[in-house]
Amino acid sequence: EAGVAQSPRYKIIEKRQSVAFWCNPISGHATLYWYQQILGQGPKLLIQFQNNGVVDDSQLPKDRFSAERLKGVDSTLKIQPAKLEDSAVYLCASSRDRAREQYFGPGTRLTVT
Amino acid sequence: GENVEQHPSTLSVQEGDSAVIKCTYSDSASNYFPWYKQELGKRPQLIIDIRSNVGEKKDQRIAVTLNKTAKHFSLHITETQPEDSAVYFCAAFGTSYDKVIFGPGTSLSVIP
Image 1 (cartoon, chains in turn blue, orange):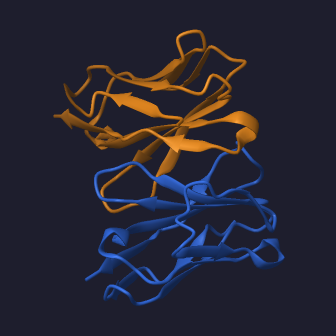
Image 2 (cartoon, each protein chain N blue to C red):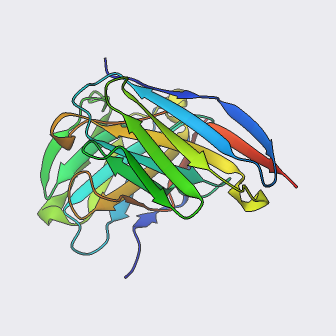
C-alpha cells in the first residue's frame, strides 16, 4: 500500500508570512496526526483527527495555526503568521484507528527567517 | 500537564552488547506505549509497542517491558549492531487514546 504523502518537502519563508502543508494519509486510515518536531526533540502532537473530527488540539497554537481534514481524508495544516520559533519539521502520521501503529510521512522541513 | 521522561539522552555501546532505554510517564490512565526509531533525516518508524494489559513483548532482538505500578516502560535491544544506531523515542497514549506524548529521545551509538 502507498505510504503517507506530504508536500512540500521543504519550505523557506520570512517571519509573518503564511504557509500551508498538505498530507494524504494511507487509504482507509481513520486517524490522522500532525506533529511538530524541533531539531533534537521528540515529536510534539499538534492535532489529532478521527475521520473529519478533531479529538485533540490542546497543543495547537490556535492564534496562528489551523488545520482541517475535509471529508476525512486529506488534511491541511496552516500557519499564519509564521514566527522564527516555528522552524521545525512538520510530520503527518496516520493509523487505522486510535492507538494503533502510526505510519509517518516524510515530513516538511520549514525554515522561518 | 502530562509528561514522558526518557533516559539516558545518549547511549554508546559496543557492538554485540545490550542497550536499555527507560521511559517514565505521568498519566496513570495511559494504555498504549510504542517505541520509534528515527535515523538522521528520516521519519520515525515503529519498532515495537505494548498495551497496558501486557507486561512484556518481544520481537527478535527487541523487547519492551511495562511496569504499570511504577509507570515506566523500557526498551531492550540485545546483540546490538551498527545499524541499530539512531535516535529512539518512546511515546504514551493517554486517556481514551486522545493524548499522545513523546519522550525527548535517546541517541544510541553502536561502536563496531
